[in-house]
Image (cartoon, rainbow, N blue to C red; front, side, top):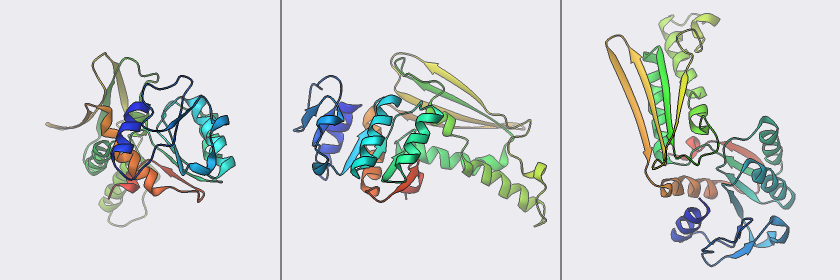
Amino acid sequence: MGQILGAGLSGLGRFTIVTMVDVHEPRDLFGATYAPSFDTVDPSVVDVVVDFSTPEGVVGSAAWCAQNGIALVIGTTGLSSEQRAQVDAASTKVGVVIAANYSVGAVLSERFAAMAAPYFDVVEIIELHHDKKADAPSGTSLAGPKPSWRRARRRQRTDQRSNHAPHPEGCAWRGSRWRIKIHSIRLPGLVAHQEILFGGPGEGLLIRHDSFDRVSFIQGVALAADAVDATPRLIDGIDSLVG
């Protein structure tokens, strides 16, 4: 991902890659300098850090960014609750974007799912990734049943009650028919793919998104890098950045 990000962001013309940080020197630096750790990075030349490394690496990046007033964009998944808490703490000092998926198509598929959610009582998710992916289920699938899905179901059920105050059980999205199963598949040859399957009486709806190449994440990362600065705030997911 570091090589894809370096090539993709520098190719857009509005970003300059100034430093690439990794334990091993990358094969292509895209005109940037190499640093084995943030200890040797000059914060005065950095506007935003983009981190697609490991959960442990993200914690270090968050601490460095918070200390130096540098914005942070995170694409790493699989963070523990403690690691996520450290990211959240950093966002009280500097702007942070964290997302499980930076593909615009993936964001749109989630929106379509939110549109469908009020009309179906059964849904399952199949997420498929390359066999080197460290975490399962994927961060995208875990983030899939988002508040927008729940709000959509609540609005639908509230409307059906003719503006009466909604009963707690009537508005619950996680009833016996809405426990969402997530199926994870890891195979060589895959990149990142997800299917959201809704079922109803006599019909089904399949919403599928495919990332055939990691360049599909560049547009979303660029949106995040443009949107965030040193102003303290947390943007969780890029849905709000996709018009």
